[in-house]
Image (cartoon, rainbow, N blue to C red; front, side, top):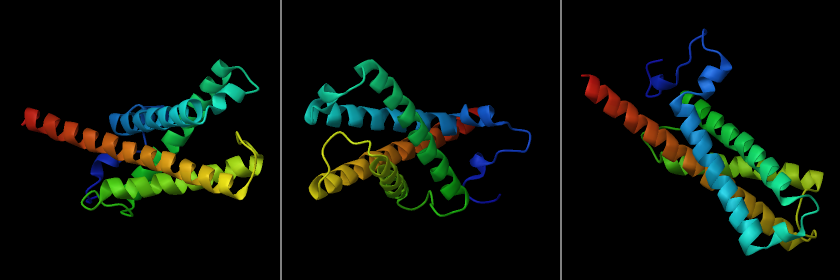
Length: 166
């Protein structure tokens, strides 16, 4: 692998949990998950006041939502790393914009799952469906932007570590 993402290479002796605990995966994953969870709480809890109408305990909802956002954040992070590895996304171009796009695409598919399963806070209507899908795509898009921030931070740290060692 002679391209710009050799830091992503994972050898055959590396097992799954070791990969997830590496800084270039862990930081973007957790950063994006926290950003998306925070945006969701602000939108549903403070702006729309949807959380007041829950039929399950608030603590249970927040724990389950946190787990869902961890899964979504991991998905966006792994998709972004694979897109860098296969050079669909270049670190030399508009990298944050591209990761925002990855997040928007993931957000669209997340909304499709939510829509098909009927897991929405409000009544169905065309305007609600449109607003909800746009919000979901924006939320996951900002999660993708957070992934790019985590990757950029990791690359910067790697550069500083190499400078210190030489």
